Length: 330
Image (cartoon, rainbow, N blue to C red):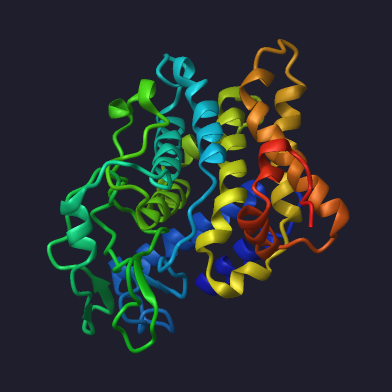
């Protein structure tokens, strides 16, 4: 049953109308995984060591510096939502998603201020715990945004494990989300944290959004996916745009061959729902996601099988495509 849920989740990622189904299937994976862990059910997955952890071939060594203007454009677009997000209409799940999106972006900004304490921690010797199948840093620092449930692989070198994979808390299982929405500094949203960039922390924030979708109460999930909920549409438009731009940088190698057509179609449906709103007041909040969508659609029009690897190459070689809302120039 768990394998079937994973297959449905994978299948829906290729479907034009599979956005909600994708995360509902992910919730099924979460529910069944919690049953296996909590009830001790026997089966092929119950014998897997450390089901609460996942190991990935993603790497944070020599992580590229992301175009800073592009990151600040995204943060300024989210800053434009501040009055809505701090007002009475914002739902807790929308606040949680926005908090993690801000963390994702801010941690990729480049700071001119050093943070020796955190750097020393990341420069420590990586420890591999064979019994629990995890890789971690001794004396992990308490930094806003790192989740308690996550172990932190060393950023400067590969993990010291037999399979040469990084270990992370499984995002489909409940965990501490780390970011407190009420502590967001809206006035200084485009200011880099001291010592940044922190690509690992940015990745953990992205993973935390999956935790939100897979473990949040069902009513909250349906609220943010309700096409008549325009604030939810605005939040999800930003989520789609940011995930489209940044996820290829930390994706496992075998995931880079994934076509992006469905992702573009999901984003287009969300933005169409905003544009169809009779009041016309919501379109102003998605100008940046619309620009990213135009870039996506032009790339797909020129290259029908455009993949995540193409997005990654474009981000490194032609970041202006995202900022100008066009296809790549090479």
